[in-house]
Length: 437
Image 1 (spheres, rainbow, N blue to C red):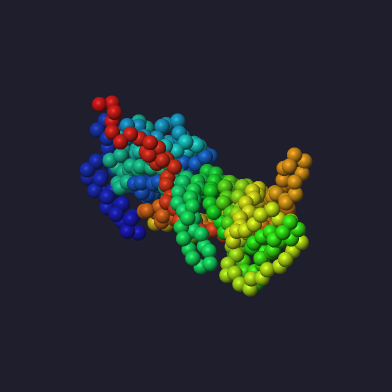
Image 2 (image 1 turned 120 degrees about the vertical axis):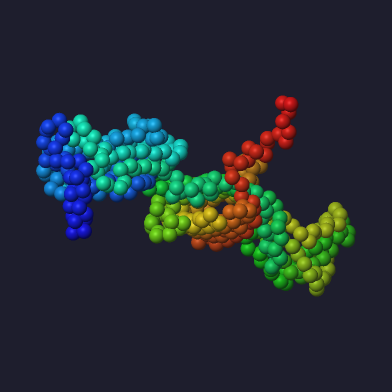
């Protein structure tokens, strides 16, 4: 009601200003009329996509009896000088309209063509023009917003945080955890590539990790182990065996070089834009160099036995013995989940997987050519890995555990490292001074 009263008041005022007839003598029954036609906002923002999309631009319409406005039109004009999006990237479904087709609202539609190359933000500047036949009647339009800027984003705004953590290299140290004593030791390195699935781009994400680390297996302490620690000849037909009881500590340490790859399928679209959960089947290969160390401690209850048999000289047994063997592991994870929580301050990633494991290991037997026989074992594995990175310093704490169900053999590791963006590594090799001078 207030709007109609305002229009009537302005109609009366415009009648005084414009008069009732044109100077050339032609009568125009609507010459004294005014109307309101404008955009609802002066700026809207859209994003490019890998397929065609549509931009909807709503108008605000306030025209009394639009059916009586014959020969009146409005159209949308592109300001090409101020617009930076190429004309070839979009097209209007229609940009010229009759007043008689207007209702209380109107929506202008622009087709935004697909694009797989995102470079930078661009814009389209549009103006709303009105006319009767070929005459401009913009002065009669009391609408406030006759120009709009359509900002066409590069599609990166909602994945900027992910982009910062997408490709990282890590260099640091492993922690050896032996009998409740933790110490940093040995080199740790890794490269992680994390490309999450993004709406309107890639439906399936991708995660790849190449790493070299040290993992601990179990540490066993066994008391009262009887062991011969010395053999000494007595005569040409007899020798003495010195035997004692020991506490035997067995530790298993593995140095690993592995490659892990997994597609990512979004499971839950959280209201928290920083949190994502994915289904992630996986394939992993590990070259594992395992060292089994037996340390015999606390010798007691020594005794000597005279044994028949010739021994050419005295034999002393080391208190520490080591056995090294190479293993090759293939893990196929059928049930896996990948959780990512990433903000401007921190990146947290956790993934767990269960599946089939096949690993090859050397036996204690020699085959033809004096080579070690290689055996194969099948099992069911399960693993969990966690990565926590602080954004400002790049300090990263990583932990993992892996085990098998049929033949249990746990492996666990903890690392501390510095995360580095791979695209920054090139700066390491730049000269300190300009040698061209």
